[in-house]
Image (cartoon, rainbow, N blue to C red; front, side, top):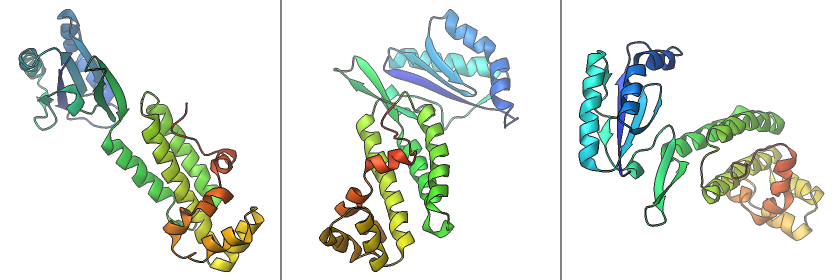
Length: 237
């Protein structure tokens, strides 16, 4: 199945009614695709049809254009295309081939990952003035929902990297809350670090991001620390 047909239908009504209206209006289209024995998936006004060749995909696209026109629905020409499945993210997922093209696997699209990082930056922003506990609480709520939605992703290594980046954002907040090197030194010593390790991390305290990635910060606040405060790991089920 090399060439999915992705169709974007533009409705006059938006909001919470859009998925319901799509299901009502496009039920006949779904039945026609089923009658033809085509593999397809649709969510609200987004629909992908999977076929084995570009010629077949062109025929399906022409059929869909006709079916939607009969319903007086407008297809979005920018978001609709005949293209290889690996080039068409769908509902936040991207796809790629393994085992010489015999198997298609799923991952989080680059756009969805960028949106995740933007939201995490917003929640962990230094300018918000929130306590560390409040930041973790909001982050926990957001990440649980995100993780549940992308639970079908097959990229644990990629998500493990994102987990590490999120923990570094939180270590940065812990450093910022110390405000200056002497206090950070005392905090790290209280967390069990040696005098030398604590001093090496604290000497450049105000270089927040660099300090947050220092090995001493990893030792003082390991992965288990963030597990204990309830931070979800995106890379594990």
